[in-house]
Image (cartoon, rainbow, N blue to C red):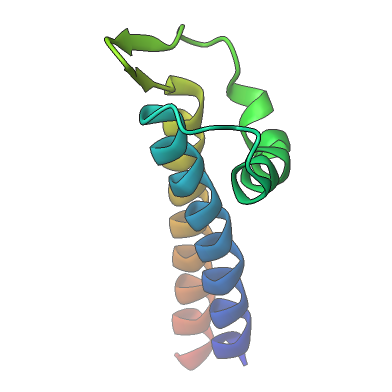
Amino acid sequence: MFGIIRALVNILFGVLEFLLLFRFVFKFFAVNPDTPFVAWIYRTSAPLVSPFAGILPDLKLGRFVVDFSTLFALIVYTLIAYLILQAFSYVDNRNLK
């Protein structure tokens, strides 16, 4: 029963992490935000990053930018997905006994 839920959690958080990874790479290389695909990635991932905005300022390394808000969001959502999957595994193992 929990197999379907685990698969959905993996898909959902996989898509979130994919979007955040694209955002991080695009910000790092300072790609043109006016292109449609990049603008869509920024718009779609903005609500995911907003809780972490301003924790640390962006680090500028010449032409490159390290967006710490996106990096924190990526780490936190990965940990949340891991904890959810572990909780399902724990409940599933308890039901087998």
